[in-house]
Length: 297
Image (cartoon, rainbow, N blue to C red; front, side, top):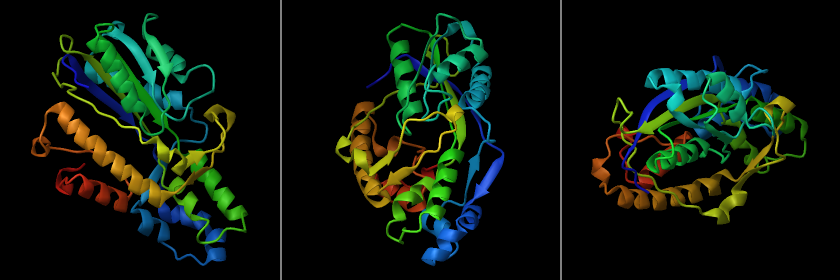
């Protein structure tokens, strides 16, 4: 997919102030570590993740999405009346109904003619939303749009810790599917896109590509569909090793498709942003794409 008249006009983000280290999580997992005789420092050693952040306990995703959205709109200098779509693109949401986008739309003071809805697609929600807004701009349906999302990892991490400490049947082998749940962090981001005629930056969105290797959909899954305001206590089961291998294969195939779609050569790329934050995963992903780690953010 190529775009001829879409610009990424501005970004806005907000981060929680509460920093939670892997060492602190291990201290809370002391009952599990004693039972299984796990060495301290194992979590950071395995993942390469030193810390993650949590929002305050009572935080709703929409509250931080409003903050990030305001920052993105202010940075863009956009007239709010030009914003014809708002997509809330995160896993976490305030309630099952109404759409979290409804409150964000209201708090941002966007026009009634603005299309609003939620998109939930694991880690891809924001990118999916960007492409949907970009398509609407490219088709001339809207002049500008905003995609915003907020993830809150506190509920998953704390529920995982409680479950691991309480389950005395766990072994070093059966604890592995829960490790990925301890790496999740919190954050919020918003992206304003607009047509080239409105743009002050001319920061073009050029191309996109995607692939769906859904035969691997069982490698990472959670429990019931829950919302933050309902006090969600999610648990996830992840085959981290196989997910990494299949994710890298999917990434490599998508990267080749993207280069062809964009008409780029690998040497044309000045900067990359690898989604994988685990140390080993990031290293192997970049190696599979033949990308120099020096240009990765």
